[in-house]
Amino acid sequence: MHWEQLLSLKRQGDTNKRLRKEQDDTRLGFEVDYDRIIFSSAFRSLQDKTQVIPLSKTDFVHTRLTHSLEVSVVGRSLGRLVGKKILEKYPHLQEIHGYHMNDFGAIVAAASLAHDIGNPPFGHSGEKAIGEYFSIGKGKQFKDQLTDKEWQDLIDFEGNANGFSVLTGSRPGVEGGLRVTFATLGAFMKYPKESLPKKPTPNIADKKYGFFQQDKAFFEEVAKELGLIPNKTGNDVGFERHPLAYLVEAADDICYTIIDFEDGINLGLVSEDFALEYLIKLVKDSIDSSKYNALTTKEDRISYLRALAIGSLINDAVKVFIENEEAILQGNFPFALTDKSKYKAQMDDIIKLSVKKIYQSREVIEKELTGYQIINNLLDKFITAYNNKHEGKTSNFDNLLLKILPEKHHLEKDNLYSRLLHICHFISMLTDGNALLYNKIISASNN
Image 1: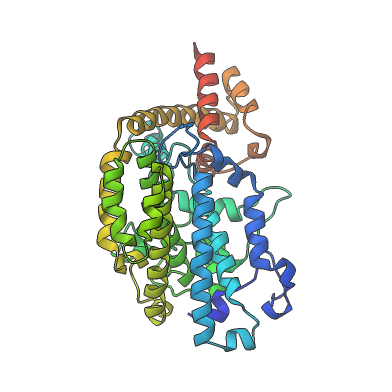
Image 2 (image 1 turned 60 degrees about the vertical axis):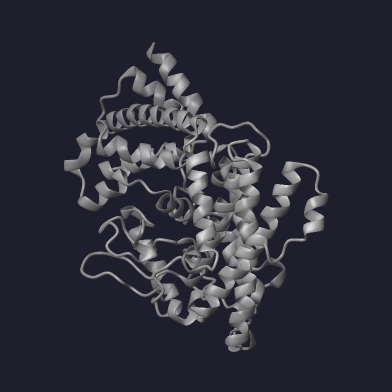
């Protein structure tokens, strides 16, 4: 892979090449990506989507929106620091093509901002609830009418693939979705493969999948433009990662490891003594003990340690990336950057404690169970009504239900796979609160 291709400013539908040296630096294309994402309705909906604690109204607990903003800030720092080193190593990128270190930061920040944009309500249990509706629920009836890969898209419903649809999907009058640059799409694509074969290798890029069958053709167009390295044979489609996708992943890993832990401490699920014990290992080289001891509240002390910990992990991730940059460009780095971090053991200890104390806490489990029931009910009712409409046999209930479907989702879909995925996409774009409201309306109408 070559940085000149990887930093492509092309957008969906472009016929002319966009050159970096011809860009207006006051409105740089990569920064436009960030603006388009942050002004989108899909991004705004993240303000009422679960990060750790579902349906929490506590002001210091993170939602998907605050998490995504923080990941983008960390991503920007990672991108700029890496960009500075890349331009020093390949000066022609700046001298001939006009790239600046801030371009790298802008790309990673935009992709990081969008990294959760396709996630359903109720956290990762929302993805599992959609998948299990098809694998073990009423959706099983559709299996024989779909191809193996279409079926896998549904039973392993994936927020990353759904996010690619959000960023690129067309509807009447809105061609190409948000039309972000191919460089940003490449950085966004943490798992540049289709749903089958499932986890064919231990390569981090094969851990999940990154696009639905309906988006396959455009995904391949983006990969070809960026010069990504194909790594599948026969009829299977998959590629090695865009190098900047490693930085997006690292930004996410750093934030959820440290900030979810901070949420758990502030909620009282993890004791402050644990926080000091675990975080001090990350910050022992940078902590100012007198400043720390002068802080009088738990929230301030934890905030100070969190900021230092994130700084340590950023610098380490940049070091790992630069040391392995040539292997990454050759498609020979099948790891996450944090897998090779000198702080890996400390991060693993924090995650292990978070799983025990936070992710498996009674409050989280109870809310996830509620989410499972709600998503299962919404899928069942909307899929039935949508399919009945296509077949011309709607009941009065079906007609009433479809009237509350938002206008932009009133689309005709000719084949079953498209209809099923369309409803899954609609439900995945609901906030936690709207999913509760829709479920309440449907349940009340059935009584």
